[in-house]
Image (cartoon, rainbow, N blue to C red; front, top):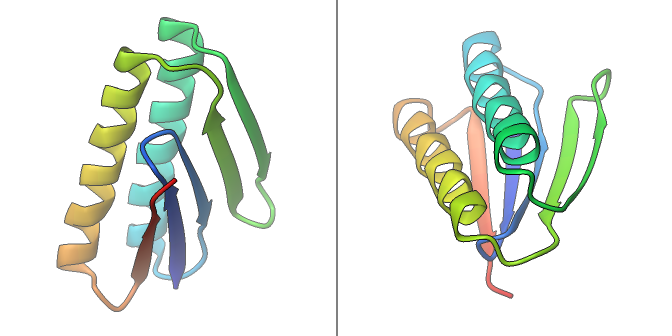
Length: 96
């Protein structure tokens, strides 16, 4: 099962193991969002990952409306995956 923790509107943690199609979708969404925020928007972030363990931690360090919009898009995409594969992904939101 893939476990997603969403921290407010500026951070997340994903531990991705499980159904290959779900894992691939979650990985594609998260990696694209992180890379876009870093490379295209240039927002200040704190990101760490363990590719072998399937874990990524991300935190937006400054208020950046463009980056937050990309994160909301990511969170929306993850929710859509959950609708289709409810047994394969668990999402928890934490308000900060």
